[in-house]
Image 1 (cartoon, rainbow, N blue to C red):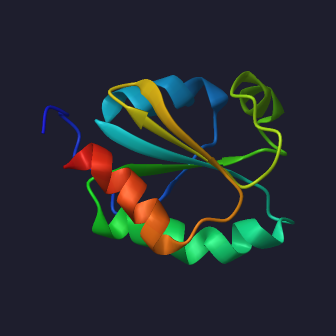
Image 2: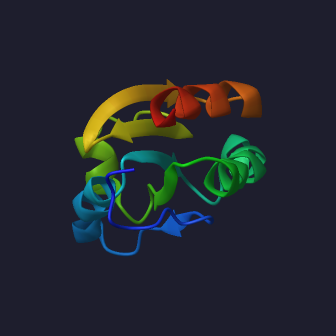
Length: 113
């Protein structure tokens, strides 16, 4: 692993939009979960997103679209949940809507292997 940071085993909650690029750059593979607290499918995805953080070599970054509207717009987030996979700081995958745990795990581990 080329990253100097150890991969967190719990999702990182984005508090400051200015930290987004740094977090994405600090880890080899980052799953970004654009979500909202009022979104039912987002709530259904929560255990899966936490499992990805705990069980894979990917960092997980949670971005509340209500708080970070400009960031959501920057990445073209139209519907939530939108899950983006960044590899070496570059956007590699985009998934819109609730995903099964196996589909999400397969997508993430394809980049961490």
